[in-house]
Length: 442
Ligand SMILES: *Cc1c(COP(=O)(O)O)cnc(C)c1O
Ligand code: SF4
Image 1 (tube, rainbow, N blue to C red):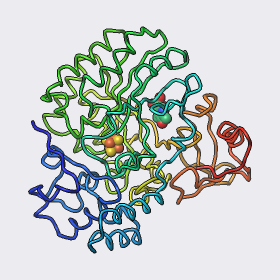
Image 2: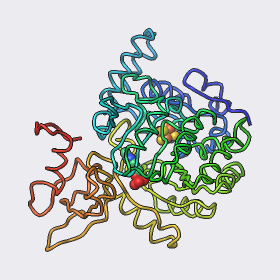
Image 3: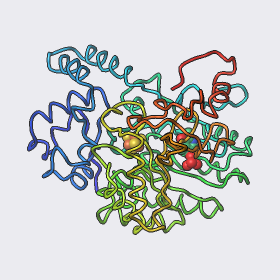
Image 4: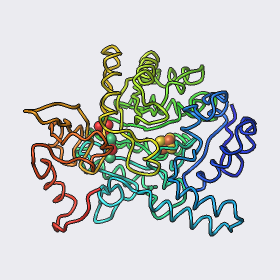
């Protein structure tokens, strides 16, 4: 299968696009000038149900929608896109809007950059003790873009916000020097957008270095959903699977972190076959997704998705909460609502599917999971715990917030029982800001 990429400048060549409402096409042009837009022939021909436009979840997941911009931003953008403004003006307007969409949530740029010999390693993040995130420089795009993606600034050319690394050597050195690191997680964009020979140039040195404490090589990718031919018919598909096999042979666990947002992405011969080929290398596929309004905000959809995943041999891993960036207002649901979806999903599937954890917010202090709503001595509270903490000691500690059925992110939460702060607040301030200067927490 030949990969055909569709962007803002050629999406009108998609035959199915000519049949949809003209207003939707205009919306794609306007919103797609601000938020990233890219899709491909597999997504268009196999995942989207074109008889169900505009409601189709895969359409909303991959094509920009009017309401993804706030009304005044939409009007502002419309006025330049359709009034003959020059490219420079369009770009400037788009950037003005982008900067209002919280382009770097959770302090990714400032706080998690590791150092080696006094130099900052901008292609890496080291937030949780065991796991180093690595962003290969050639892996900073994807086979198609998700409209909810928190990495959107990387895709729209806000260059100064982009972080990527060429430094395979420094990665090996860093991991060697840090015995607490058991996992290296390759992420992006999508690292599997890279040719195998490039990915290999990062992974083989890690294997060759024979680092005892390095146990897991993880690859976070949406390729199974958006381009399963990466594992089937692409020129270097077989080389990729051989690389996975070699990771296994070297005694390391290849953990494929698959992003699936909707059960439709698990249908069809190509994805089934691709999953099988990956599993045959000895790798394990774990799955994750945020819970998203318009896409998958129902327990039926989640239960269907988990069952399909398990049937195909994948292990459900994380349910996330939509991050506070980009089109969050479009996708987000209250935390209480996310928990209800999690709970009803959990109740309706067997234990094999209940390896799913969440709903979890990846935020400044850590990965914060909502455990539910409870009443303690007459006060209605929300119960949380940290799955990961910036301080490892915070993990698995429960804490309580005032009940708030509108809260969509941890910054909306107030401590319960009349307390002034959460157990981690002071320490988090100290970790982030050793000089003790007050500032706004994300
Ligand atoms: C989620 C995440 C990880 C991996 O966490 P696990 O719970 O081990 O899957 C690592 N680093 C960052 C910054 C993360 O957000
Ligand atoms: S595939 Fe992953 S990184 Fe790429 S747009 Fe989707 S969520 Fe973002």
